[in-house]
Each structure stands twice: as structure tokens, then as C-alpha cells.
Image 1 (cartoon, rainbow, N blue to C red):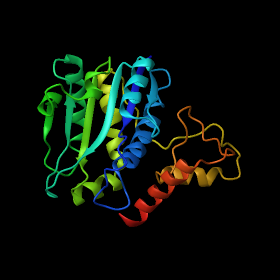
Image 2 (cartoon, rainbow, N blue to C red):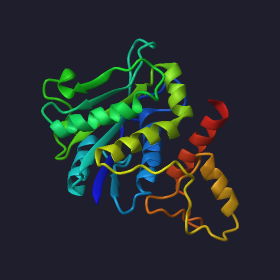
Image 3 (cartoon, helix red, strand yellow):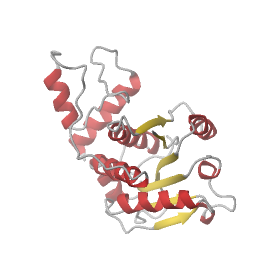
Length: 242
């Protein structure tokens, strides 16, 4: 069983050029899609994830306590120039496995984004001591900068095609661990059989509005949380406006 820690951005103040989105919200939405795909391999993958109440140090500590085999940091980039574009992936200087993970992640995600891509880089390109999230995690780690959220074209593409980006990340994880990826399919939930809203839940899943929980259940009779409502509204807004 391979353990993957998914660590979406914890930076809600990083506003997207397309309102009302921000880096934390979009990356956690993307992370949810990635986790749902990984969880289809229940005999292969165990998944951990940070939450929006954590700071970066707490997320790193949680990843280490989880004893992850790989750590995936999901981010988007920014620049003063609104035309700056492209995907890039960072690894910690000196980590052979981290570099391999970054190269595979870049291989699968860079072709999806519309901009001119920027390559795989050591984190010491940014800081002399590297990036804490890559340096302090005890397992191989890679930090994905999927697009520039200051670039309107790239931002609209990510918001419209999160499923494609999630599929790329999922396939990268599969390749890293030499696991055969499954064909894309609509998730089915064993706890919605004969439920009055079964057809509506399946249709909402097809539209990418909902994806259930990490344990493979939908829990149709559970109370929905404020965070889940917000995620649903943002996905619906995206479908209607982007």
C-alpha cells in the first residue's frame, strides 16, 4: 500500500484574476478530484490531505506523521506581468526520488495547460535553502505550479478543465509507483442504491459538481457542511460562467 499526501495551497489571499476565485479554494477543489481518482485504487493507495485550517508547518508535520511515500504540493503561480504563463514543478535540491517525481508530474500536467511551459526546477532556484515544504518532508516531494493565476487565459482554462488537470496528476502518481491507471469513469457510490435522489447524484457526478468522500461513499443523508456548499457553488458558478 502506497501512501500519498496531497497538500493543496493554504494561501486564500492569493486572488485569481478571474473573480471570485483564490489559490486555496481552487487547489483544494483540484485536490478533491485527485483524491477521488486515487481512491479508486483502494488496494494500492492510501491518501492523506491537509485542510484549510492548517498552516504550512502543520501540513508538513501531518505529512510526516502520515509517513507518506510521496508528498504532492498543489499550487498556482503569480507574476506582475499578466502574460507570464506556463507550468513548472519543483523538487528539493539533492533529492533523487523527489526530482523523479517532479519530472513525471511535469510530463503529465504540462501538456494540459495552454501556456508555454517552464520545466522542472530545483527549489534552490527560488531560495538558497530551498522550499520548506520540499525540504522538511521526510519523503520524496514535488511542488506543482499548475498555471499562473495572474494570466487570464490560463486561469479560465484551469477553472474549466480541473478534471483534466486532476487526471494528469493521478496518472503521474500511477506512473511513479508503476500502477496501471484506470480508465476515466463516473464514480459510483454503494450507499446511493435505491435512494430517491440516486439519478440526481449520478448526474451531478457526471457534471463534476460532486465527488463523494475519500472512503468511496456519498453519504446522501448526511448534513452538508458550509465548506461543501461553498465548493459546490463555486463548481456550479464555473460551469455557468467560464
